[in-house]
Structures are given as structure tokens and as C-alpha cells.
Length: 231
Image (cartoon, rainbow, N blue to C red; front, side):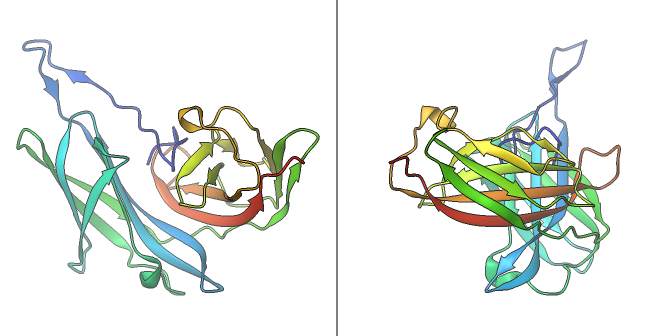
């Protein structure tokens, strides 16, 4: 997953690699396996997530661990250029997921089969504590503060409605950021806040595989429910 994250949340920037001789688009695929840590049933637990995106439409993506466990990714946001899969909460555990090499087999819409690998080292980042999450009637916005993470490379804040749909997300925040605001404008698809509705603030911090990598090693999620009410 690239650091151009803003939507997962993920907005992938696709490279169009063009052959000078034929002007044909050359398929290029990026695949990532990473750990997600969050509170499940009152405990901090970890699970696996997989992400693949490409500069050509894909038909299927299958990922296999070194032990032979196989998972199938699905389209993300109905895009044939981006596939994603996250294990169910029931599969999260207090133990870390299997580490090692994960092999992604990608079949494009044109029938090409591309194999990519990604190494999961097992470095998991811990969720950060939200110290303050309040609605400001004066500014008509949610004001959020959290504890700094010593390990995070960047953070992303997402707002979800009561159906779990993303209605707002910010650009990635620096590793030293400890506060942000969620305004009443700039929401997804020009949506607007509904007075009296409960929203879930989702604060995610990300650890990259290395300082010069575009791929993730771990993501940690902290959530907080809040009512949008300016009266």
C-alpha cells in the first residue's frame, strides 16, 4: 500500500508504462501484505490484510502464505484496478499473524497472469489512545486529539456513518501530528453531516516496511463514536 493513502484507506496512483514500439500498456502490479491491530471484543488483537493495485484492470487476485494458506481478494470500491481483503474480526488473535513471504497471483482482465511477492516481517504497531474527541458547536466540526506514536510513519483519520460507509477522510498526517479537525465540508461525494446522527471516528496509524518503502508493514486502528450536533 502506497503512502499516497487517503481513501483507506487507499487512493492508488497508477503508473502507465507504455511501450514505445506499440503504444501498448505494460501491466504493472503492486501487492502488499500487512498486519492490522485493533480492539476486538475488548482486547487488542491482530489480523492480516492484503492489498493489490495495478495500472490495468484485474479479474482476480489470490494470495498464498508460505504455509499454504490461501485467500482471495475482492475489488475495492468496485474498482477493477484495486483489490483488497481483510480477515474477519473472528479471525483476529492476540498472537501475530504468520510472517514470511506472501505470493500474489494476479489475473488481468486480458488473461495475463502476474506473480508478485511481499515479505511480512511481523513488526506490529500499537493503536494510539484518543485523548479527546469532541463536537464544537462554535466551529461546527469534530475536534480530535490523540497520544503521539513513537513508531508511526503517518496517520489517517476517517469518518464513517452508522452503516459503516466512509463519508470523510483527510490527507495523510505526519508522524508527529497529535490533533486534527473534521469539518462540515469536503466530505465524500459532497455529502453533508446529518444533525443528531452518530458517526464513528477512525484514527489509523501506519508503519512502513522501511523508511524508503511505499509498502506497509502494519496499521493500527482506534475508533470513537460521536454525535454531530451543533444545537
